[in-house]
Image (cartoon, rainbow, N blue to C red; front, side, top):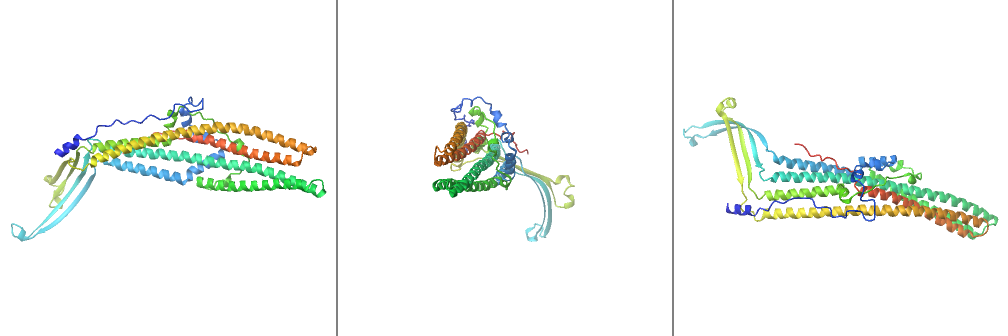
Length: 468
């Protein structure tokens, strides 16, 4: 008892649990409009409203239905829910019904009468197994920890869904970008094939030098190589999109230069501390922190005595027919017990210390997740702003190159310039058009990245607490 009192004196003080403040700046750097938008506008934005293209919506829906990683995430949620329900069941007593029949013979030399005796015993009862009365909240804290872990897994599933949507959208956009670039390359190839045909006829007639013909042929072969490379890249990207979607969807996507038709709504991020804490990964980190805090309470409650109740109520008789007839055949027992830790070699203190360490680690993980989320949004904003500017400048560059090519052809036709000037301008024009398509694809991908970084399309639902 002295040792038990010493342990009770060593019980840690109760800990006030709270979620730390977000260790991120109050505004987004370099975006003057970023601190004014309401977070609800983004978090309540369904992915179908952001990705308005019907073909893209169809591909995303296929991925949500068939992606294996998302299936695994759903199974992990089911597993976490079952784990919570198992722990929750510890708060209730276990009742069991037992029936027993016994027949025994006692030899005469062991009987006071000197004659052998045969006896019967029949009994049935309801029994209460050792049920811990949760005076100190140990079982309740363990149940809360399991519940928070379940919520964390559920938030992780929403995060996996958002990541899959973004992954599928980016793969689809890359495929559309490659289609646009391939279309430009094929158009250029047809033009150069015709130029090569004309110059070959001219060379045969002696009106064009062999040097001009080889220069034109060089550009023609280069265009063929570019088309082959882009077709190969498209095939590989189609394989990737099929793998992400969990089904063959690339065969239904036909590139018709639709990249310029795709538009996404502009998102205003709002205040960082309001928007970030509702991202699925941040919610998951918060729930894991709450689970760690609940485990501290459970470890503290283990220092106190445990009170358990055991009992049974039933009937017993030597005659089966009289088992439920005779009033005095009732039998019962009630056994309360108290278990006080006397000597445990420091186990309780070390378990409590481990719980505190894991709580501190969960705090660090939560703060790290917030900082990484802030960087995700800041990077996406920077990319969107920079790529918007690059796209505008590249459009101007393409227009300039088109005019340059037109003037070079006029100068060549009028004998004022060599055909090499035309070849250089056409080569630069093709390069500029390819870069414009690449920048446009990256620009659209940056909008998807911002949508994902802000946690859009994953509004926080009411938590589905399993009922018992």
